[in-house]
Amino acid sequence: MPFYHKLGKIPPKRHTIFKKPNGDLYYEQLFGTIGFDGMSTNLYHEHRPTQIKSVKDPYSIKPKIAVENNIKSYRFRGFQTVPAPDFLESRKVVLTNSDCSIALAAPQESMGDYFYKNSDEDELLFIHKGTGKLRTHLGNLDFKYGDYLLIPRGTIYKIDFDDEDNRLFIVESNRPIYTPKRYRNHFGQLLEHSPFCERDIRRPYELETNDEKGEFLMKIKKQGEIFDVTYATHPFDVVGYDGYNYPYAFSIHDFEPITGRIHQPPPVHQTFETDAFVVCSFCPRLYDYHPESIPAPYNHSNIDSDEVLYYVDGDFMSRNDIDAGHISLHPSGIPHGPHPGAVERSIGQTKTEELAVMVDTFKPLKVTEEGMKIADDTYHKSWLDENHA
Ligand SMILES: [Fe+2]
Image (cartoon, rainbow, N blue to C red; front, side):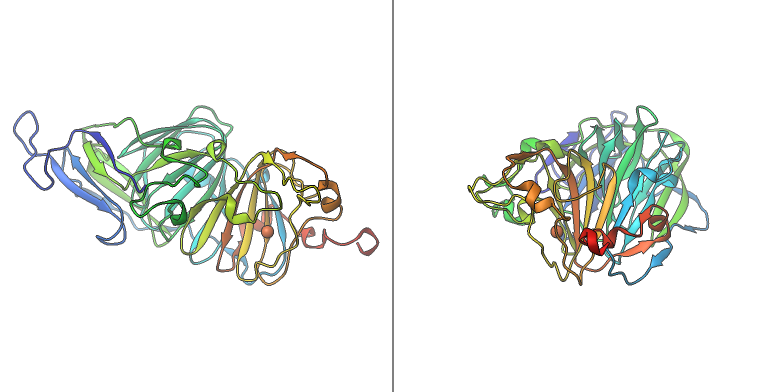
């Protein structure tokens, strides 16, 4: 996050002697991205964070591709994704390209006797169902329905779920995920026209410091494979840190929609950005107030981006036969727009309760085998007039 955060105890100066009560040194680590050029955090460990006991041969979790080059619109019934006890095993990549992957997960249990680190990608977890706690080496965050959890690459984490009915929509990004630059001033402060502000960003609040030694399994994702690495010291042994690189939470319910007299374009809903895709939040809002306005979107060709919509809650005005948990994919190369009757239906309506997350990728997405298991292969014909169907 582009604002400063401090948790636990740190010495007054960077890179200077910092002693434990018994006189031994704490061990400093710079945790950053984009070499030394991106956001970073300076953290202090009980033990050297480099003590590895063993490394097993990796196994691949690369998604299997079903449709390499796609020009069909698809609907995926997300809640048909089969739940699994383990968080990592429950994650099913539905869509993917060389920049990002879009996955669904229905984990039934808290993460077991291991820690997880994704060294390839930033992870954006959207909590559709479930409550619990994200535990990281940089502190903990409570989560509930509607929360985005932004976990920067390299963050060591575990997730505790309060019960077994959990549904997550996940974006994994090879590029760092930021909030949109146009909402921030030269100093990084969020501007008045931003649909959210610093008060809406929840930072880690609870640092777990465990100085245990022993055997600690960390599953590390690297280049699409998982390495089981056994550490000799507890991965949560940080006594304090400060900086800009840390996980945070933002609730979609704290997004303040920008509305207008006539239909506003999707960028007003933008919540996160990378240089390869954007994430938007469609939230309950008043409709356009020009007396002749058409609240439904116009047909449009995002000729160079694929549009993914994850439907969370409410009534989806522009779509027929779409339920919570569904994903629609409207690929680049063809126009898309409201379903038959949706434009007419929208006229005169004053507000919407729709809640959805949109991911627009600049490179085309491939459909995976897991995606095809929950795909509606007739959706691309659902815009036909009845007499053509
Ligand atoms: Fe669109």
